[in-house]
Image (cartoon, rainbow, N blue to C red; front, top):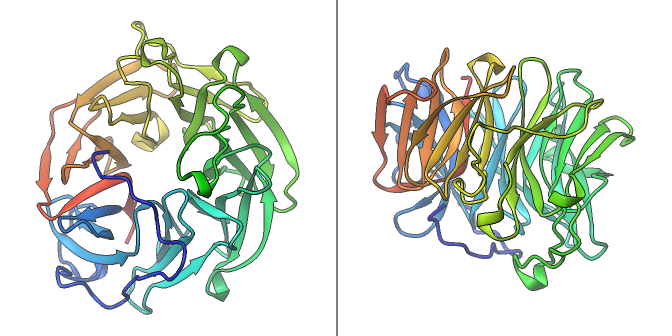
Amino acid sequence: MVIDRRTFFSGALALVAAPHPLRAAWPGESSSRAPRFVSACRRRDGTYALAFVTADGKLLREIPLSGRGHDVALSPDGASGVAFARRPGQFAVSFDLNGARPPVIFETPPDRHFCGHGVFSQDGRLLYATENDFDAGRGVLGVYDAGASFRRIGELQSHGLDPHEVLLLQDGVTLAVANGGIDTHPDSGREKLNLATMEPSLAFIDSRTGDLLALHHMDPALHKLSIRHLCCDARGRVWFGGQWEDAIEAAPELVGRATRDDPITLVTPREPMGALLKGYIGSVTATGGGKVISVSAPRAGRILHFNAEHGELVGQVLLRDACGIAAASGEDVAISSGEGLLEISAPGQEPQSRASFADIAFDNHMRRLSR
C-alpha cells in the first residue's frame, strides 16, 4: 500500500471513543441499500482510523486509532467486530455495529504483539488472535473472552513462526493458521531476521485443545515464500496468498491451496505470474459463494480471480494500489485501494460502480458488513 509505515505506539493508546467530526452515522442509521464495508485507513491528516463506508460513497462512521490498523474480525452474528493493529502493534479495538456501546480497547501482554488478524469462535464467545511471542521466537494464538471486554484467558501454539491470518473452518472447530515463517522482534522494528532459514507452514489446529491436527510445510525450494493470507472455498479447501522474500524476478507462483489431508499445491496459470505480481499477494477472499477466489497484488496494481474448482484464472482487474477485497452481492466483488477508491464489479469485468473517498486511504483489508 502507499500508506507510509509507522511504528505503533506500544504504551498509552490515544484512541478517542467520541465521534470524529467526519462521522455521518452509525452503519445502522443510513438509509442506503448499497453494500457496506469496514476497513482500516489513513486519514488525509496522517492519522489512522477504522472507516465504515457504503459502495455508493457514503462515509458512515470513523473510529480513530492510535496507529495503523490491519484487518477486522466480525462476530458470527454480524453485530460486532474487532480491529487489530498492524504488526508489531499491541492494541485491538472492539466495536458494536448497533451503537449500544462505545469502542473497547484491549492489548496483548507486554511480551506479545498482534500480527494483524483474528477470528471468532463459532458461538462468538471467544476470539483467537495471531500473535508473536517475540522473546521466545514462536507464534501463538491469543485467546480472548468476548463476554468479558476481551480479557485474555490463554493462548494456543501456532506451531510455527510469524502467524498471520487465521480462519475457522466449516466444522466450527478447526483453525487454519498461516505461519509466515519470518522471525521478527520489536527491537528491530519490522526487520526480517531469518530469511535464509525461514520455514513457512499451514497449520490445522483444534480450537478447543490446541492440538495440532496437520502441518503442511512449503517445498524446501520455496522456503522464502511466506504464507500470509487465507480464505476457504465452497468445498472447504484453504487457499492462501504468499509473499516472496527474494529477488522479484525469481518469484514463483504466489497462490495455492491445501486441506487438512492434502499438502500445499500452488496454482499455476498458463503464463508465470509471480514476478508480474511483484512477489506479493496482499489479500485473499472467496467470492461468488466460494466458487471464485479473488486475490490482490497491490504492488502490481492487479486483482486476479480464480475458478476455485479448477484453479483457472478467469479474470483480472487493473487498479493502482488495490488491496482490499470483499464479496459484494451475487457474483460481484468489492475492491478498495490506497487512493481512496471503492469499486464494485463482476470478476474481471469493468466496474459497475466506483466511489471515491477524498479524505481516507484504505489499508490492506476490507470486510463486508451484514447489518
